[in-house]
Amino acid sequence: MLTQKKSDKDLVVNYLKGDNNSFEQLLNRHKNKVFSFIFSKVKNRDLAEDIFQDTFVKVINSLQKGKYNEEGKFLPWMMRISHNLVIDYFRKSNKVKNIRSTDDFNIFDILNNGEKSQEEEMIRKRIYSDLNLLIELLPIEQRDVIKFRYFKDKSFKEIAELTNVSINTALGRMRYALINLRTISEERKIDLSHR
Image 1 (cartoon, rainbow, N blue to C red):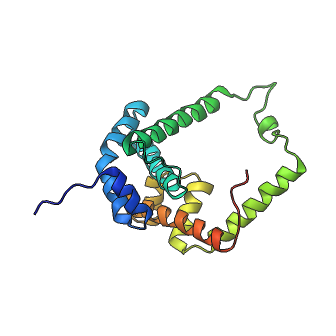
Image 2: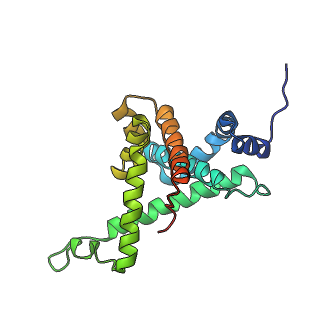
């Protein structure tokens, strides 16, 4: 029996209505092209997998926040996100490579020199405190993935090994953690958007 292949637009609409299977179809449809693009830029499989997973998380967040323009094509949009993450990676790695400690200059002298006003610092601390509270309300598997990824800077491959699950399971937990964080923050009227 042949079923008509749904368009990317239809799958996005269905996903936003709560059909997670539609997102899986979108991902399966485009993952090889996106991963190949990332790998062609970074030339390292583990790093490419990491950036691909970050692309996946960013796509989900952007869709849920309504930042996807339906007039655009889904694949070029996803490719642009992956391209931006590759650029971010190279910018970050270049900054790290270019700063060296010498006898006259110590990197630790400038780390906390981003002078912020007291008000900004109070807001930052409040958001951090609220976020920690929300994370503690997550199921333990989701909490672990969030903490490993964002507080311990672990790759999804490392998270999968540390939690003894597959990369897909780790990704799924991250996806549900982000969805749950958003839901809990809305229920408790906690705004985490100020930076």
